[in-house]
Length: 176
Image 1 (spheres, rainbow, N blue to C red):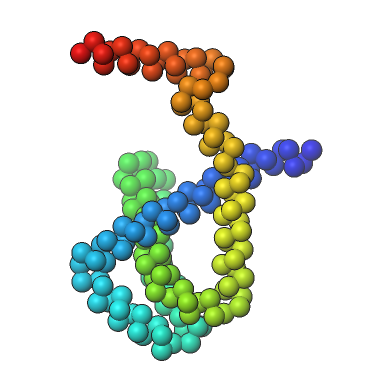
Image 2: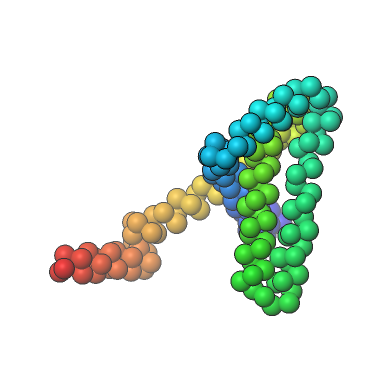
Protein backbone atom coordinates (compact mmCIF):
# COMPACT_ATOMS: atom_id res chain seq x y z
CA UNK A 1 0.00 0.00 0.00
CA UNK A 2 2.72 2.48 1.02
CA UNK A 3 4.78 1.44 -1.98
CA UNK A 4 1.86 2.30 -4.28
CA UNK A 5 1.42 5.69 -2.62
CA UNK A 6 5.11 6.52 -2.98
CA UNK A 7 5.33 5.41 -6.63
CA UNK A 8 4.65 8.93 -8.04
CA UNK A 9 7.32 10.38 -5.71
CA UNK A 10 9.87 7.81 -6.90
CA UNK A 11 8.97 8.51 -10.53
CA UNK A 12 9.36 12.27 -9.95
CA UNK A 13 12.74 11.78 -8.26
CA UNK A 14 13.81 9.48 -11.08
CA UNK A 15 12.80 12.09 -13.65
CA UNK A 16 14.74 14.82 -11.83
CA UNK A 17 17.76 12.54 -11.56
CA UNK A 18 17.58 11.67 -15.26
CA UNK A 19 17.28 15.33 -16.21
CA UNK A 20 20.49 15.98 -14.28
CA UNK A 21 22.15 13.02 -15.98
CA UNK A 22 20.89 14.19 -19.38
CA UNK A 23 22.25 17.68 -18.74
CA UNK A 24 25.58 16.19 -17.69
CA UNK A 25 25.78 14.03 -20.82
CA UNK A 26 24.79 16.83 -23.17
CA UNK A 27 26.73 19.69 -21.58
CA UNK A 28 29.99 17.76 -21.41
CA UNK A 29 30.47 17.80 -25.23
CA UNK A 30 29.45 21.48 -25.35
CA UNK A 31 32.02 22.28 -22.68
CA UNK A 32 34.58 20.26 -24.66
CA UNK A 33 33.82 22.40 -27.74
CA UNK A 34 34.12 25.60 -25.69
CA UNK A 35 37.45 24.35 -24.33
CA UNK A 36 38.59 23.66 -27.88
CA UNK A 37 37.44 27.08 -29.13
CA UNK A 38 39.03 29.20 -26.43
CA UNK A 39 42.36 28.79 -24.69
CA UNK A 40 40.89 26.48 -22.04
CA UNK A 41 42.65 23.51 -23.66
CA UNK A 42 45.96 24.76 -22.28
CA UNK A 43 44.31 25.37 -18.93
CA UNK A 44 42.92 21.82 -18.98
CA UNK A 45 46.38 20.41 -19.76
CA UNK A 46 47.87 22.53 -16.98
CA UNK A 47 45.15 21.45 -14.54
CA UNK A 48 45.55 17.79 -15.52
CA UNK A 49 49.29 17.99 -14.83
CA UNK A 50 48.68 19.64 -11.46
CA UNK A 51 46.00 17.13 -10.50
CA UNK A 52 48.39 14.31 -11.38
CA UNK A 53 50.75 15.60 -8.70
CA UNK A 54 48.06 15.87 -6.01
CA UNK A 55 46.77 13.31 -3.56
CA UNK A 56 43.23 12.04 -4.14
CA UNK A 57 41.99 14.03 -1.11
CA UNK A 58 43.45 17.27 -2.47
CA UNK A 59 41.90 16.45 -5.83
CA UNK A 60 38.51 16.31 -4.11
CA UNK A 61 38.99 19.95 -3.10
CA UNK A 62 39.82 20.85 -6.72
CA UNK A 63 36.59 19.08 -7.74
CA UNK A 64 34.44 20.84 -5.13
CA UNK A 65 35.80 24.41 -5.25
CA UNK A 66 34.42 25.54 -8.66
CA UNK A 67 30.88 24.69 -7.57
CA UNK A 68 30.99 26.95 -4.50
CA UNK A 69 30.89 30.35 -6.31
CA UNK A 70 27.77 29.29 -8.21
CA UNK A 71 25.75 28.69 -5.04
CA UNK A 72 25.21 32.44 -4.36
CA UNK A 73 24.04 32.86 -7.95
CA UNK A 74 21.37 30.21 -7.34
CA UNK A 75 20.37 32.05 -4.16
CA UNK A 76 20.02 35.27 -6.18
CA UNK A 77 17.74 33.37 -8.58
CA UNK A 78 15.64 32.13 -5.68
CA UNK A 79 15.52 35.63 -4.18
CA UNK A 80 14.29 36.99 -7.50
CA UNK A 81 11.60 34.30 -7.60
CA UNK A 82 10.43 35.14 -4.07
CA UNK A 83 10.10 38.79 -5.12
CA UNK A 84 8.04 37.78 -8.17
CA UNK A 85 10.67 38.53 -10.82
CA UNK A 86 9.69 35.27 -12.49
CA UNK A 87 11.56 35.39 -15.79
CA UNK A 88 14.72 36.91 -14.35
CA UNK A 89 14.67 34.51 -11.41
CA UNK A 90 14.11 31.42 -13.53
CA UNK A 91 16.71 32.58 -16.06
CA UNK A 92 19.28 33.26 -13.34
CA UNK A 93 18.63 29.95 -11.62
CA UNK A 94 18.76 27.99 -14.89
CA UNK A 95 21.94 29.79 -15.95
CA UNK A 96 23.59 28.91 -12.63
CA UNK A 97 22.37 25.33 -12.90
CA UNK A 98 23.61 24.84 -16.47
CA UNK A 99 26.90 26.58 -15.75
CA UNK A 100 27.33 24.46 -12.63
CA UNK A 101 26.72 21.21 -14.48
CA UNK A 102 29.06 22.30 -17.28
CA UNK A 103 31.87 23.32 -14.94
CA UNK A 104 31.39 20.17 -12.85
CA UNK A 105 31.55 18.00 -15.98
CA UNK A 106 34.76 19.78 -17.08
CA UNK A 107 36.44 19.45 -13.68
CA UNK A 108 35.23 15.88 -13.17
CA UNK A 109 36.72 14.92 -16.54
CA UNK A 110 40.09 16.20 -15.30
CA UNK A 111 39.87 14.76 -11.77
CA UNK A 112 37.95 11.48 -12.33
CA UNK A 113 40.93 9.10 -12.25
CA UNK A 114 42.34 10.58 -9.04
CA UNK A 115 38.94 10.73 -7.36
CA UNK A 116 38.24 7.09 -8.19
CA UNK A 117 41.42 6.13 -6.30
CA UNK A 118 39.46 6.83 -3.11
CA UNK A 119 37.41 3.71 -2.38
CA UNK A 120 34.53 5.60 -0.78
CA UNK A 121 34.30 7.91 -3.82
CA UNK A 122 34.39 4.92 -6.15
CA UNK A 123 31.53 3.31 -4.20
CA UNK A 124 29.49 6.52 -4.40
CA UNK A 125 30.25 6.81 -8.12
CA UNK A 126 29.12 3.22 -8.70
CA UNK A 127 26.01 3.86 -6.60
CA UNK A 128 25.15 6.94 -8.68
CA UNK A 129 25.54 4.90 -11.87
CA UNK A 130 23.26 2.19 -10.44
CA UNK A 131 20.68 4.80 -9.37
CA UNK A 132 20.83 6.29 -12.85
CA UNK A 133 20.17 2.87 -14.41
CA UNK A 134 17.31 2.22 -11.97
CA UNK A 135 15.82 5.67 -12.66
CA UNK A 136 15.96 5.01 -16.39
CA UNK A 137 14.31 1.63 -15.85
CA UNK A 138 11.53 3.31 -13.86
CA UNK A 139 10.96 6.16 -16.32
CA UNK A 140 11.40 4.29 -19.64
CA UNK A 141 7.85 2.83 -19.69
CA UNK A 142 6.44 6.33 -19.11
CA UNK A 143 8.64 7.77 -21.87
CA UNK A 144 7.55 4.98 -24.20
CA UNK A 145 3.88 5.68 -23.47
CA UNK A 146 4.42 9.40 -24.14
CA UNK A 147 6.15 8.58 -27.44
CA UNK A 148 3.22 6.35 -28.40
CA UNK A 149 0.76 9.11 -27.56
CA UNK A 150 2.72 11.67 -29.58
CA UNK A 151 3.02 9.25 -32.50
CA UNK A 152 -0.73 8.69 -32.34
CA UNK A 153 -0.40 4.95 -31.81
CA UNK A 154 -3.01 3.21 -29.75
CA UNK A 155 -6.77 3.44 -29.51
CA UNK A 156 -7.40 6.02 -26.77
CA UNK A 157 -9.07 9.38 -27.39
CA UNK A 158 -5.69 11.16 -27.21
CA UNK A 159 -4.26 8.88 -29.89
CA UNK A 160 -7.25 9.45 -32.14
CA UNK A 161 -7.02 13.21 -31.56
CA UNK A 162 -3.32 13.26 -32.42
CA UNK A 163 -3.93 11.22 -35.59
CA UNK A 164 -6.66 13.70 -36.56
CA UNK A 165 -4.30 16.64 -35.98
CA UNK A 166 -1.56 14.92 -38.01
CA UNK A 167 -3.96 14.30 -40.91
CA UNK A 168 -5.12 17.94 -40.76
CA UNK A 169 -1.51 19.20 -40.79
CA UNK A 170 -0.71 16.91 -43.70
CA UNK A 171 -3.73 18.13 -45.68
CA UNK A 172 -2.78 21.77 -45.04
CA UNK A 173 0.80 21.17 -46.22
CA UNK A 174 -0.41 19.28 -49.31
CA UNK A 175 -2.77 22.12 -50.20
CA UNK A 176 0.16 24.54 -50.50
